[in-house]
Length: 318
Image 1 (tube, rainbow, N blue to C red):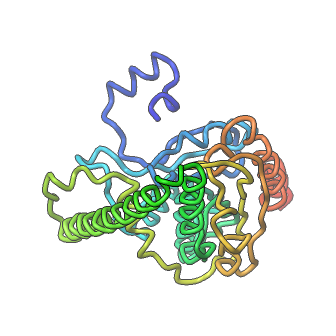
Image 2: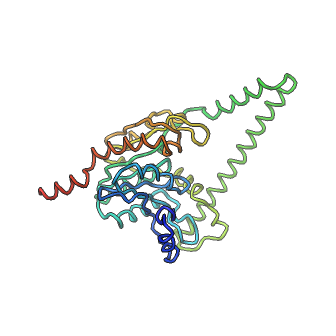
Image 3: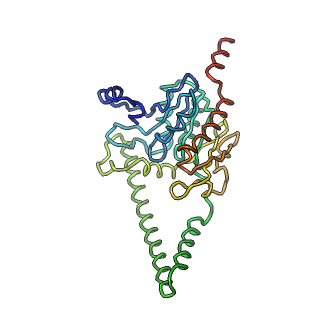
């Protein structure tokens, strides 16, 4: 993200010469004097994926929120509430009072939601929680979806195999699936143990052993999300942007979850509003699909927060 904040050679030299800031807030789009939008990193800790959206929101300042770095280890927090508390402190250091506008893709949506809860606890309004193809942690997946897909692959292999090979094909598929499940279960047990160990070191204020340095943001976040349960609903409406097409890692969540609002309705006292947008889970934020999100978001924001000009006029009138 250094190249986003320092796009010229001169500014890049300044970044290299001065000590790296530990701030999690980075500027994605300078904008004007309107209420800024804060977009929280995805499960990999990335914010560059919001760059196109930020550029399309006109004169509104847009900031990305990334995991803190520069502390001799990449992962500084192992709980959703701790992550959110750090980010809330960071954005309040930049903007002391609301209204606050928050959003995020997938993991970023869940973090933005918890940030909104904590801001409300502090008496600060979070007027926007925008979730981009993100599901509530207790949203129910479509039953038997993975089993159906695996059976479909077995049927396809069966239909393409010769009569003599059919049983060997099925046995091979079932064996591969069993080995995968065993490996996956063992990997999850090892990962959870590593995250618990890292958390214990953090809680005790001691340096973790070097073998824990390799834990990446996604691994820690996945464990943190599995443990997280929201304690109440936010006051304002949640805005959900649903991807409509894509395959593999770009598969939209609408194909995975039973509830068309991915469980968000119960997380807001005013419910959730869903918008279907072109693109997949990640490509929805890429050109040309992001143009649709930007248009909807600009219109929505103009209805819930005053523009800089209107805010000044209201202040002068008072």
